[in-house]
Length: 126
Image (cartoon, rainbow, N blue to C red; front, side):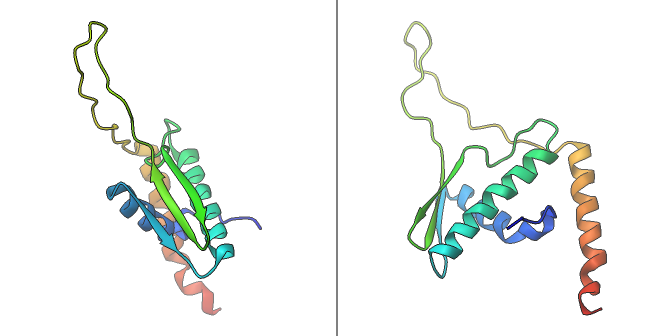
């Protein structure tokens, strides 16, 4: 089954991934394994759409992995393990991963997608 290329149709995915990322990971439990599998596919496709829109090719979810656990999807974000030091052995603090701001072109594309979505809201009854 083909997934929608309309970014607005992934609002549910975006909300879950953003909350899970802020918490350092999470788990979403769905009705059955089939629904969990479909959710995971949609989440990965959402990340692909973001990457396609990104001028840099990066997304806020590049370090995310999704694993099935029965009827749940485990959402994990990679963490650096180990100790970083200079070449002479002095400890270094590892900065947080940089935020990836949207370029003007990306913001324009998202705005246009939202505008089309809003215009089509009333068309379902026709």
